[in-house]
Length: 171
Image (tube, rainbow, N blue to C red; front, side, top):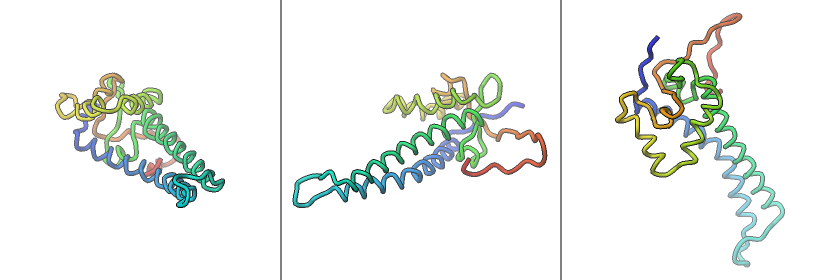
């Protein structure tokens, strides 16, 4: 089965959904940090006072924020590599595949595909994101490096025993 490459706008829609999901996970940590900073702020003293409760709330917010980033790496990196999809990709009915096999690329390559552009950042990341606009195979540069491609269609689920359950919108 030959699958068509996903267009840039379809991919952008999936990324938008994934970004909204990620940002929603950051709301609670941000609220904790802001509340902790407010508790540590002293009007009479110019600056912050290391108040026990305020510092504890800031630390809890930071730990929750770190947890959100680890979860993001698992969902948008590892799990995408294993399953070929993210919540946004499932919603837009596209998937990530290994160019040679047509199967999901695997967890390590999924994490690499998620992590490397984030570490590079800046202008190179912008070029990477826009690359599918003029690429004949609609691949990002990181897709070319990792030998992956985003294509139209969802992975076929093979039932082992019993009926196939619908995939969870958040898994």
